[in-house]
Image 1 (cartoon, rainbow, N blue to C red):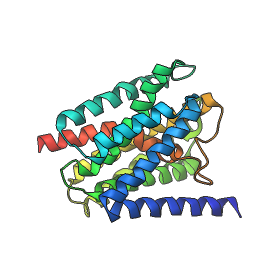
Image 2 (spheres, rainbow, N blue to C red):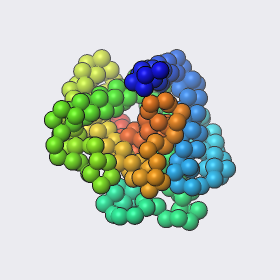
Image 3 (cartoon, one colour):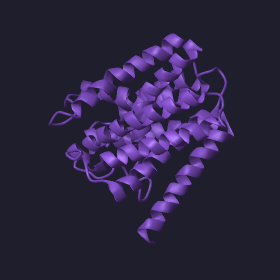
Length: 269
């Protein structure tokens, strides 16, 4: 079968699965992203050469205590946010340094997988419950913005791109593509705000900016991990697209910043 057809079919199945599980019920949403979490851990453990037994145990415990029960106590949420940012910020700084983005000892790798993979997934699962009642449309809106950015960053970069964004890590990304993705994501955020009115237009625009900015950084961070591991994709679960991490690297890096942003909005309002 033609590679482009395989890629298109794989992407369509992924989108249908994500939308259906998210809209059907909170339980189906939690189950799907719980599965995504387990697959992402397996893929990332292969990248950093870490056995999966302890990370899987950490994920199950975290899921049962912080995701499945959806305890939205503000202190718990802030602590989870702080733990994720404790890992995310050094990874951001590490983009501008040569060499591997992590230490080689096991304890450092476990801290990394907790802050870079497990906690962001838990925050993502908690996000539609942030106001106490399940709201699938906040997840749908976020993914529409991510997909809009990815699509137009590619199209604008391919047609107009001349200046490399960060050639050492990701040679194909351009500044023009980044700006194009940002502009169209902001436009999409305003359109979304006319239908999903639980957030103001300004809050949706802020969501788009955070997703594009930190999502682009997240894509570069994962590219650096893959480059150091000597692989093109994080996995093979999605033919033509790679692994779950390849599809969700943007959002899992951005989600701690976005979750904190929504907590601030809720507190102020």
